[in-house]
Every structure is written in structure tokens, then in C-alpha cells.
Image (cartoon, one colour):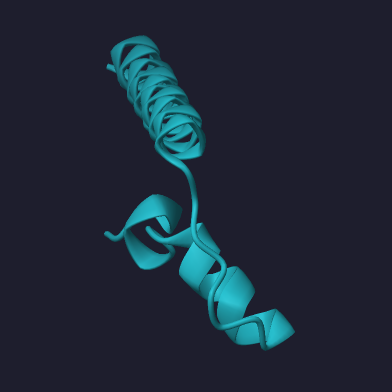
Amino acid sequence: MLLFTEIFQDDEYLHCCLTGVEDARMSAEEMDVQRQENIAYEYLCHLEEAKVYARFTLVLLVLI
């Protein structure tokens, strides 16, 4: 299963395509912020996956 971040890894590229701005480049500081935000987003996605798995496991234990 693909995560949203894998589909739209380069938000700046997507922005350029949607707005028609061809030379929109990010500074190193902006890239660092974007990278940190992507890491936080992926962490939260994995946390949600773990929560769903834990709930599923608990339901199975109750049913057995």
C-alpha cells in the first residue's frame, strides 16, 4: 500500500504544475523544514497503523 507521501513526495513540483510557475525553488532551510514535516507525517502514519493493529489484535483476543 502506498502512503500519501510516496505519491506526492515533491510538493513543490506539484505546486509548480498546478500554478504554472516553473522556477519555484526551495531554499536549503525550506527543504529542511519540508523534510522534518515529512518525517513527522510518516511517524504519525506509522503510529496510526500501530493503533489500528493493536485494536484489531485486542478484538481478536476478546473473540477467542
